[in-house]
Every structure is written in structure tokens, then in C-alpha cells.
Image 1 (cartoon, rainbow, N blue to C red):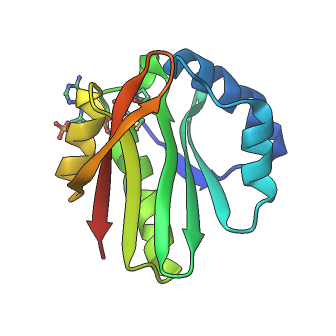
Image 2: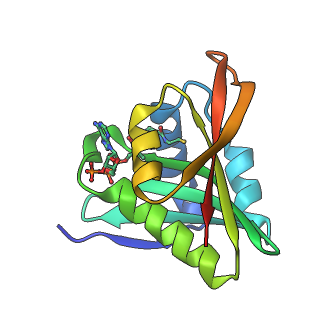
Length: 146
Ligand SMILES: CC(C)(COP(=O)(O)OP(=O)(O)OC[C@H]1O[C@@H](n2cnc3c(N)ncnc32)[C@H](O)[C@@H]1OP(=O)(O)O)[C@@H](O)C(=O)NCCC(=O)NCCS
């Protein structure tokens, strides 16, 4: 199966939004994604296979710090390395921009994502109490040092 990762554009937003709604109980709105497309410090990447867009990342890079603001893979395409590839691509892109540290937040019950990030070399920095809504949950803050 061949998959490629590329920068997203306006035409990808409806597909991204469908995946977002499928994956999260408190999904981002289309305006948040639109903002990320036009914001110079933000980047959206999509992973596309022969059936179309299967997942995406949203990252922000400011000076020497980056953050992973969103990552999702559509349910039907999970467990085949797409999440890992998207994360790796986002990290490499941020490193090419000169970052020294890369941060993310994840729901503390999200074991799959926690494993993915730990395997990629992220470490736990702390907990942000009641950071998420729907349902209310603490966030684990993680850091990758370049
Ligand atoms: C988290 C997510 C992006 C993983 O995507 P994926 O394409 O299934 O992940 P991959 O196939 O690349 O797997 C990468 C690693 O994730 C972890 N992982 C994936 N599926 C897992 C599962 N069912 N159980 C435990 N760990 C799992 C493993 O560490 C895996 O590495 P391994 O195969 O070497 O063990 C995907 O489950 C998803 O979109 N979930 C909903 C949205 C979400 O939670 N996003 C993260 C917000 S912080």
C-alpha cells in the first residue's frame, strides 16, 4: 500500500473535518482548521493513500519550540503505521525549522496515543488538570527534546 504525506490545502478541509468529528468527542471547528491553514506558524499535513486522506497532523512552530496540536487517523485505517508516519513527518518538519523542543497534550485515558508518543521518544512533563471537556479529563503534557 502506498501512502504519501503532503501539506494540506483548502480543498482537503471537508475530509479533514469528517475524520476530526469521527475521532474526537470535542472536535475542532472548520474555522480552527482554516485558521491553521492561513497562520504562518502553523502547518497541516495530510496522509493520503489510494483511497484518499486517511489522517492528518496540525503543528505550530514558533522560534525554537514546536507543538503537535492535532493528530488523527480515520478508524478504518488505524494499526498500519499511519499515525507513526504522520508523527515522524511532523517532528522532522519541525526539526528542519530549527526547533529544540516539541510539546503535545494528550488525554490521560488515550493509551494508544500515549504509547505512540512514548515509542517515538516523548517523555511525560506533567499533568494539566481538567484540560479537556466532553468529558472533562486531565491532559498529560509530553515533550520531545531534539
Ligand atoms: C492515536 C492514533 C493517531 C494512532 O494511529 P495509528 O495509525 O493507529 O497508529 P500506528 O498504526 O502508526 O501505531 C503506532 C503506535 O501507536 C500505538 N498503538 C496503535 N494502536 C494501538 C493499540 N490498538 N493499542 C495500543 N497501542 C497502539 C503503538 O505504540 C503503535 O506502535 P507499534 O505498532 O510499534 O506497537 C489513532 O488511534 C487515532 O487517530 N486515534 C483517535 C484520535 C487521537 O486519539 N489522536 C491523538 C490525540 S493526542
